[in-house]
Length: 452
Image (cartoon, rainbow, N blue to C red; front, side, top):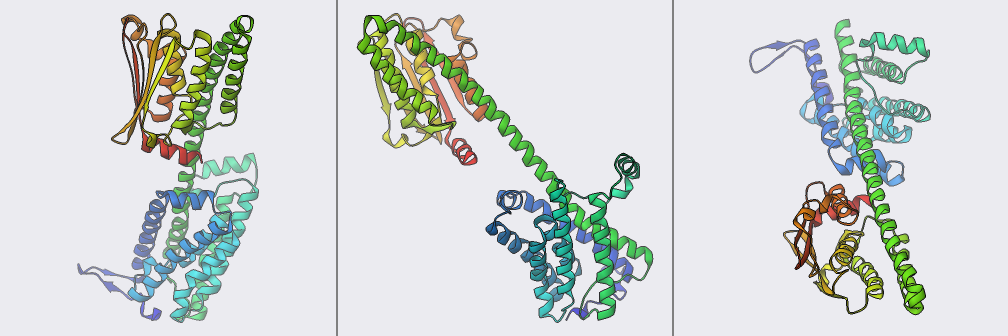
C-alpha cells in the first residue's frame, strides 16, 4: 500500500507540474507548518502543560505522554498510508521529540507506537529507525539534564556564526544544539540509506534526486524538530515568569499580613496591660482569647479560609474589645446566610474592618456593629456598618489609602483580584460608617485551586 506513494512528476489542479524534488520541498514546508501548529495548540492547554512540564517524572505522567505523542504521530503515519498524505508522516521526528523531551524509554516506546500503522502495512523498517531515533533523543535528553540546560534548539544555529565563534573562543565545547543538529542529520541519512537498501516498500521515506534537495530536506527535518522545541521552550519561560510573578504577589501578601498581625497584637497587649491591675480575671480571659487568635494565625498560612472561620476569628477579637470597653459598649448583630459559611474569603479581611469600627467609631460612645454577607451574580458581598461617630468628609477621601486597617484591606484585595473587586467606605459624621466589600467567587476558587 505504501509503495503507491511514488514521487513521479505530478500535475496539480491548476495545471502546474511538480517534479519529485519540488514535491519534496513542498512536503518539508508543510511538515514544518504542521509541527508548529501542533506544538502551539498543545502548549495552550493547561492539561498538556501540567503533563509536559510538571508531571512527566511519574509513571502515570510518562504513560500519558507516550499515549499523546505516540497517538498523534501514529495518526500521521496512518494518514500517509491510507490517504497518501505524505506530509503528515513524521514518525522519525515524533520519536526523536519523545526522547528529547522525556528520555530514552519514553522515546523508544513512542517510536514503537508510531511504527504500528507502518508494520500493519508491511513497512517493518520503520521499527528500528524510530526506536533508534527515540534512543538518540533520550541520550541527548539525559546529557542536557545533567548539564542543567533546557531542551531548546534553533535550526538556524549556524546562521549566527559570530555568536557561535565567540562562544567557542570563550569555552571550547560542542554545544547542545549542535549535538542535536548532528543527530538529526545522522538519523536522516540513516533513514535514506536504509530505504535504498531495503526498498521503499519496507521503509518509506522521501528520496531526493539532487544534492541541493537533500540539503533542503535535512534543513526541513531540523526545522520540524526545532520549531516545536522553541515553542515549548517559550511556553516554559512563560510559565516560569508566571510562577515568579505569583511568588512576588505572595511575598507582597505576606508582607501586608505581617503588618496586620503586629498592629493587632500591639492593641491587644495594650488592652491586657490596662486590665492586669484593675481586673486580673478579665485580663486572664483576654489572654485566653489572644491565645486562640494566635493559634488561628499560626495554624494556617493560607490566603483564604472559610467565612465561618473568619467570623469566628472576628468574634474572638470582639470579645477582647468588649473586655476592654465593657460588654454594654459594643453590640454585634450578624446577618449571614448559613449556606455562605463554607465559602472561602481572604483571610484577615473582616477583622481589620471591625477593628476600625471599634477604635474609630465606637471608642467614644456605645453602639452596634452589623455584619452581613450575601451572594449576588457570582459575587460575595460583605458589609460591616456601625452607628458610631462617623468619619469627616476630609478624612473619608483618604481613609482607604492611609493608615493600617482599611488601607491594608484595600491593597490586599487589589493584589488578589486586580481591579475586579469593589471596596467602598460611606460615612456621615454623627451617624456611623458603612464599609462594603465585593469580590468574585470564581476568581477566589481558581486561586485556591492554584495554591493547592
